[in-house]
Image 1 (cartoon, rainbow, N blue to C red):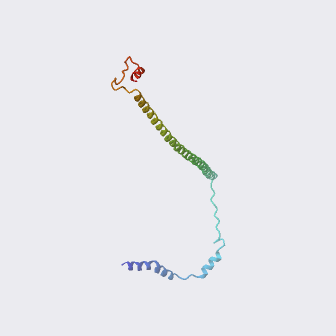
Image 2: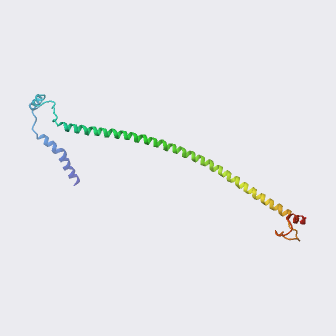
Image 3: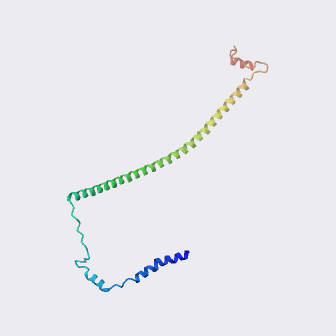
Length: 171
């Protein structure tokens, strides 16, 4: 079925036009010569000059005004496009400057983080030293003013004995 369809398509596209050309009558050279001889005369000119129709001056002025308006709009559009390009360039430079400033801030932030860590370490060391000093003072106080095994455990604040007398009494 497909082969038959292909044969008919081949016959329709290639064989039929060839047969149609062979059935046409042969051309006479006389007709071609007469056409060549007529070329360039007034009846068959080589170039045809077309004269445009005349139009009223108002139409011409209106058309010229439209063309001028189009040119004016085109020039304005070109100017606006140039300004837009200039503003875009300025925006790109501003964005680049902001990127540089952001990088600088990040660098300064890294230094500040490092400095804060050192400050925190120093504060921890100072707090530890103060705690050690308090512990040393408490230990020294307890060693110096330890209550006697047979005496009172502590001196009440409302006692008539002063702290120094208590210390002398203990020795």
